[in-house]
Length: 151
Picture 1: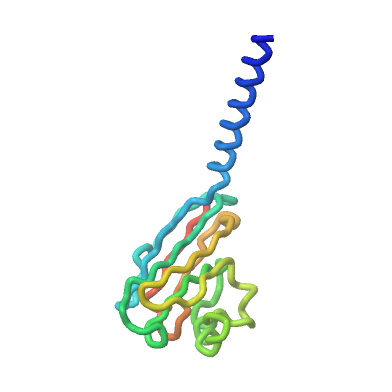
Picture 2: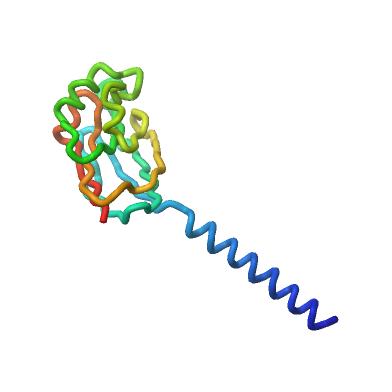
């Protein structure tokens, strides 16, 4: 009977340890990207494995008002015409500058944030390739851009 209790206690501890490992494995890798009043992302290159869970956390460290210097983070599919996307985005204020006509080119995005605000998005890294990311707030994409490289 004593051996059975010891065995059950050990099995319970093993199950708890396994559950803890599973929840840690399921947690996405967090990538913090700052955006500022000089229209610069703090991170312009990200590497990931296909299928890896990523959580991009965008922090606006600027002080200018959102209406003048709002920022978002938009991950686009390879081959997306950045100029065409950005031009369409200029009139898409109500959808956080992510134009409905180009939604099929978007992998993931955050809402537009103002000074001292944070936004995040969690997604699975897509198939291997080079994925551009930009801030689609009007006029920002030429300076605020980078690449997610998926291997």
